Image (cartoon, rainbow, N blue to C red; front, side, top):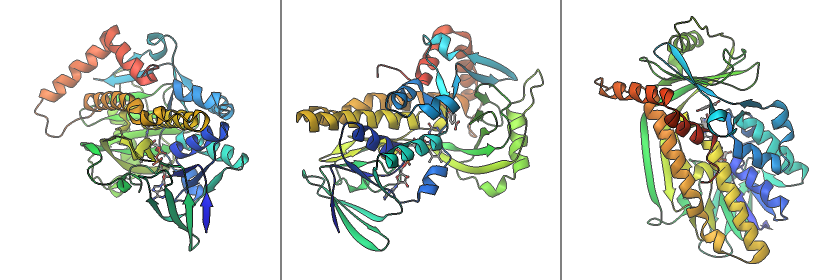
Length: 393
Ligand code: FAS
Ligand code: PHB
């Protein structure tokens, strides 16, 4: 069965959904093809921190009501090491910019609700998506749904299908330059039905490894510990996780971590990954399809938002003014911010994670860096402006 749309989008994660929403607001039609079910996509636990710029864009495009009602504004984070906490006053250091705590899955739910309310087209549970004609001005997406074959004729294709998607690999060999660094550690994350034991996020450096106390609401905590990259989650019963978190975040003044039922747990690898360019012919990559950052900098989702904002503006210029310059500049318009996020996420990861092969040299550098960031206004301002998101890159 043949279908037609202006922009074919692969993936109903934050990238694909937000792109479809932004295009719809300017009267540009799109169709989203998603491999998983709506339930799966809406329940996936991932990012939790939204930069000021992300919140502003969502609010400015009609998606801010529940976010501003249920999201939590934060004006600082804590770096904790040697049994003591050091607050980085994000808003004081950045002229009032802040971060918001609002789970990625809430963003996804709001986007799906908005697209369906506007009668947008999202095909969930599709199979065998295949791209062809991406070196032409009439690319095609072939896919199956409920055992039937479909052909979607497009003007453009947006590859918003994440790190393991199909779009990046559809680009002919020899076109892309790939940069890939795998860190020698992973993160074990839990979602727990317990009130957070802190007002603001705690990034803890400890000889046993990194730990992070984040949250999702006044009733739900989100916490992580550094583990081996190939760690088996079955080695981590809930009690062991809570014990490790308490040990790694302990302070001299007897701070205590409240524990509670673990609703979900999982282990994620940590990698830095970028492809250049982020486009080929009529195919444009956005979000995790083009780049992955270690979650230590809380940048993944925010970078995806920046990509699709750039891509939507370029597509709107093409359809409204016939100008193809913004589309030709899409990749270069994104990569400055991609590499800034890569550098910041790498900086936070290298500073806060323990290395099993450390002979003491690396841990001394890490402590020196932590003391400098916590003791120097210039150094803490640099961390703060990267964390809340630089407005001009
Ligand atoms: P996504 O991966 O979210 O979405 C891609 C979509 O494409 C998926 O729904 C997938 O099912 C679909 N898809 C894939 N292949 C397809 C195909 N062949 N056909 C059709 N559909 C296909 N970022 C942070 O900032 N903080 C965090 O704490 C954090 N934690 C994370 C934990 C995990 C386990 C992971 C994997 C990522 C985490 N991230 C975090 C990064 C994450 O938030 C991403 O940056 C964000 O999801 C990017 O959104 P998308 O680009 O839409 O990709
Ligand atoms: C989260 O809340 O999931 C979170 C917060 C900060 C990070 C990473 C993840 O750096």
